[in-house]
Length: 213
Image 1 (cartoon, rainbow, N blue to C red):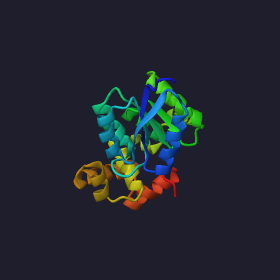
Image 2: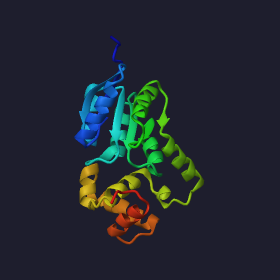
Image 3: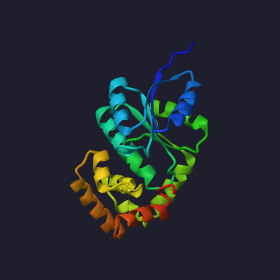
Image 4: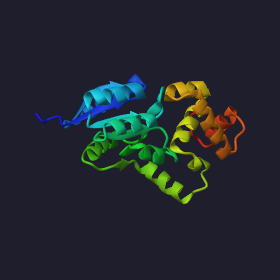
């Protein structure tokens, strides 16, 4: 019997998705799923408690969300390797997520074997970006006109939550920041993107395919 040596925490707010990942990773004899979380907050707590080698994390989740969770896990457990799994292949998501501290970025449309490969490669100290995403990142590097590139990481997170229709108060609660701070970020976002209202943010996100209708 081979030794399980790569311990994994799976983070996704859909139970059926977690079950699928768990089953998939269970087929690899060198990988063991040791815990599951359904929110960013839970991911931080379980990372500290279980000290997994690799965290497989969805980006769009309720609460503080994936990008903030990656930032915080990275600060508390720099040795943990983080794989972001997401439906977003287009920029600026991949760059922001890698900047937050993820070592791998996988599209949820990737082949199942890619996840196993990404776990092994990140555990070994490498990084892994699915091919479709790499193409998007390269394209975005050439195209500096993407207005979202002007936002800071924190502004991008606030933008992302507001684009889902959350109010400044809700965003503040989920990011554990005061709503005044969020209003400041919102004002900066609207100024940088030349938008008048919260509805403008939502429409902008739709136009740029950043939210699923």
